[in-house]
Image 1 (cartoon, rainbow, N blue to C red):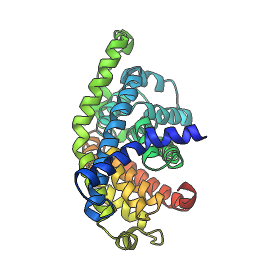
Image 2: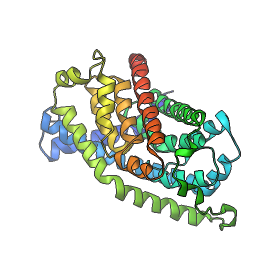
Image 3: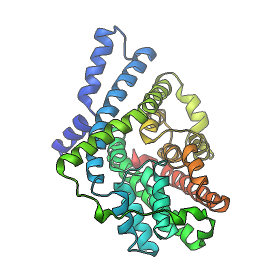
Image 4: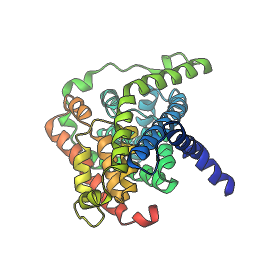
Length: 335
């Protein structure tokens, strides 16, 4: 138990880095970390370095695994199943193929044109940006393993339920006709990647993803530092406190128009939990940011008609709100 706690504190939470940055701020910058300015600088430097270290390592590992599951192979696996089994497998495969909400749209086109059931495709579409190994470990590094595992479980459940509802409603006629006439490649004709090629692919993914999201991480950490050290807890509690019945609704509404991913939302979530906001409210905010960003909705609107779009958005939002309120009821246990 001691060894596990030590590894969790030093590898994930990086207590050594926390102490190193603390010493840097006080001894080099000459600032007291207990003050607002010193605390903000410590929060910013520590979170930036920790997130980028973890992100680089995790994206590399996840991308290496992902090299065994190209879109064509994922499509072939999903195509063998129907019903709740297909929805469940689609959601689970989404967790090991970590495509963001925008890059998931071309996969939606490919999967649908290949004849996959619409509900299975939407289960994958929901799960892929919601849940992956990197987000789970980053959640554990900032909060704890309970919250990380619960986030993964509710994300997968939402993907399964959402896909099942869409499947039962039989909305295939609300998919744009051109989607069903796309050319599909055969993954079995592709050359098997060597270990060196997989390593090169994984590193390319690291550089590509970091280039695309670094600004959102910096902005998210800056907002988190401001919330953590400059905004009074009373003000946060007045808006998003657990005693406010509308806290989850408000957090979800704030998260929907934000264009970021879970890595940019995590520092904000960290600061909100520190200020006493309920875990369900915070996770609702993160899910809204991750699952239904404006760019992904704009792209999805090009391939589905308004009725299917409305059903998808409604299912996601209602699901997030329900999850938020349920998890708030277990706030003490989760923390």
